[in-house]
Length: 97
Image (cartoon, rainbow, N blue to C red; front, side, top):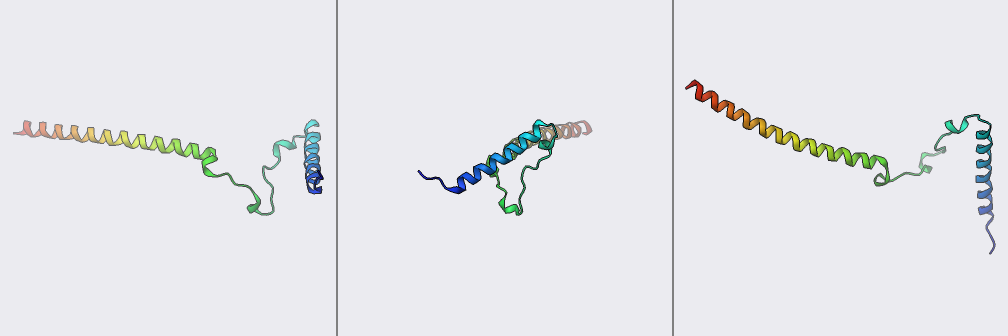
C-alpha cells in the first residue's frame, strides 16, 4: 500500500515539534509552562467543545439544581412565615377585644 506524502509530512512536523519541546523541557528553560494552548490566525480554526461535553455544563447543572432547592426552601419558609404571621395577627385581635 502506497502512503500519501501528506501523511509523512504531517508525522515529520509533529515529530519535530515534539522533539523541540522535549529538548527545551530537558534543559529546564520552562517554556512549556508558558506555551499557548491554541495559536491560530483565525479564531474560526480553533476547535470548539460542545456545551454538553464541557465542565461548564456540569457546573451549570449543579447550579441549576441548587437554585431549584433554594427556591423550594424559600417557598416553604415563606409559607411557614405567612402562617405564623396569620396566627400572631389572630392572637393580637383576641387580646385587643
